[in-house]
Image (cartoon, rainbow, N blue to C red; front, side):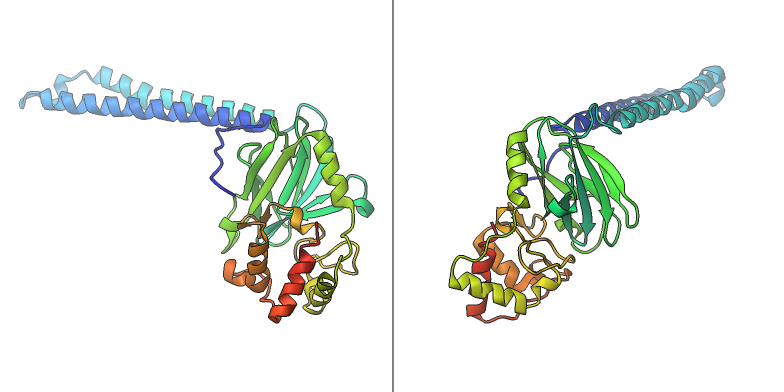
Length: 318
């Protein structure tokens, strides 16, 4: 996922207000810094201009006290109180959407990947994907957040603010994209060795395109179309992959790893570590710990022929 997204290049209402707060606080902080620097410079110049025989009694004690009270207590108190009140008003404005959410997405944080579930129509028609969140443009989406292991934090800088994912507690945020596009989300709470490689692809698309994507994701995986892919399914099963992964439409029910039903439709692999290409998939399946140290996915113990068959099967998961 190229580039670091800027929180000031916004494409959603919540992000607009957060960026507004960022600019206001930046301007206030800059102004305070400039004023302090100017006053310090004046004091240094006055000290240099004073005659050697001049004493503190020559200065106006009343004026000095007034500067201390106003500049050291009153103005800072007003600035802090105003900034705090303005921050609270922004937090209140982004706490809830203007309209009712049209869909609900359940996101579970794992070390170090995102489980994304769409369950609006019940568990029987639930869609599970991984590290890629799709949403319709122009409407608010409710996102329920849970953590599987440790505390994580979901942040999509161009669309919304940060919300923590806490084990045993469901937090809620909302996201509304103003324009279609692909945005980067990330974990904003240090969660271990691969924290920096825990990214989320957020795809905002038209309501019609979103509905089409969701319908496709609900479908089970297609059966292998040739003997090589069919033997790849056998390798997949014998290698123990179903212990952690699910491929809907097959007798698999693993939940420790990502759902692989429509693996090749995703833009990225390994939570944004690399683009989803045949070559990268081969490297990931062969030796994932070498690419992302610390993860629980083991090295695949397979011959070259078995690996080719396994990759042929995974390429059918479209």
